[in-house]
Image (cartoon, rainbow, N blue to C red; front, side, top):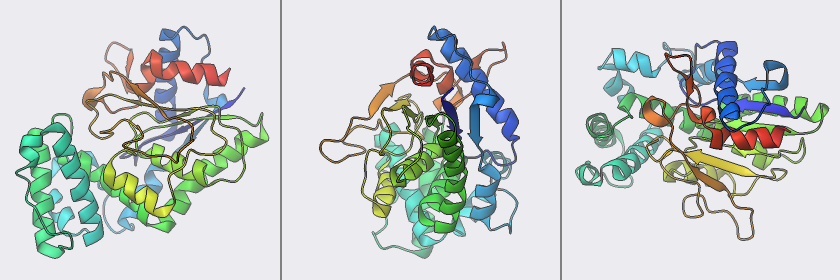
Length: 316
C-alpha cells in the first residue's frame, strides 16, 4: 500500500510517539468510516515522524526544563521571564504573530496593543510583547499566551536555525526514503508546525516518492510572519512531485489563522491551486489533529470525513 507519512505539530515533547501515532490513526479511522471508506491504515502502513523531544532540546539548548504550554500555565511568572530572555529577532517575530492573531480575533482590542518602532530592541520590545500576549490571554478565545508563545518559538527556531531545521528535516526525509523503496508513493499528512516542515522538505527535494496528496490541517503557513520567514529562505513554490495539496482549517483555529489562498500564500503564476478547505473542528481550541472524546469517539481534524476522505482516495 502507499505509505502514509504523519508529521505532528508543536508542544508534543515528552509524549510517547507510539501513543500519538495510535491517536492519529484512531481519529483518521473514524474520519474514513464517516466518509464511507473501508480502509483503516495501521502502524505497519505508516511512518510517524516524531521530533518533539528533539525540537525542545534544540530550542532550549538543554539548559532549562522543557517549556511547554502546561509548564507555562502552571507558573504565571514564567511567561514574562521567558519573554525577557528572547533574542530581539525572535521577540519581534512572536510580537508580529500575536498582533496578527489579535487583529483577526478582536480588531478593536488589537488597536490598543502598544506600538514600537520597526527597529526597536530590548526593554521596549519586551514590554510591547508582554502587553500583546496579555491581550491574547484576555480577549482571544481558545488561544492562550502560553499556546501562542510555544508555537511561535518552535516555528521561529525551525525557520531561523539551520541546525534545528537539518535535524528535524532528516526525520521526514528518512520516512520519504522508506516510501521510495516501497511502492514509490507517500501520502503526507502534516499538522500545524508539521506543515511548515513538510512544505520545506517537499519543496526543496530533487527526487523521492510521488506524493499523491499533501494534507496540511491547521497550517500556520498563511500567517504573515511565518510566510515571510519561509519566503526569505526560498521563493514560494508548489512542491514538485505533489499531485494534490489540501489545507483544511476551522475558521476558529487562530493558530492557523488564514486559509492558504493566493492572498495569504501566493504561489507563482501557473502553479497548481492549494485546495483551502473550511471545516468545523470539535476539539478544544479547534486546532488538534486528533482528540479522544470521553465517549470513546474522536474529534480533531483527522476525524472529519471531509479531511479523511482525500486520504482514503489517495491511499487507494
